[in-house]
Image 1 (tube, rainbow, N blue to C red):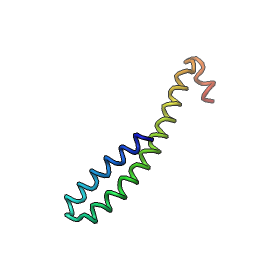
Image 2: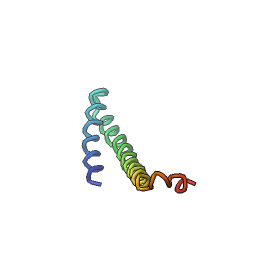
Image 3: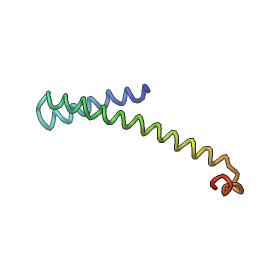
Image 4: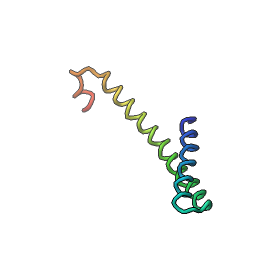
Length: 74
């Protein structure tokens, strides 16, 4: 979870800087910086959860002997 929080802070700063540079508006920069990274962080959190599930399945599949693969997939 700490990884997600630090990613959010970094992303907030980048989003603000880009939005401010493009618009010259602190308000727009702040709004974009508040909304976009939060959406991205939620997506990142779930991406990590899904990726962990995929990795677990790969690990479980590698533990099945090659001669028994059909039995385990039927």
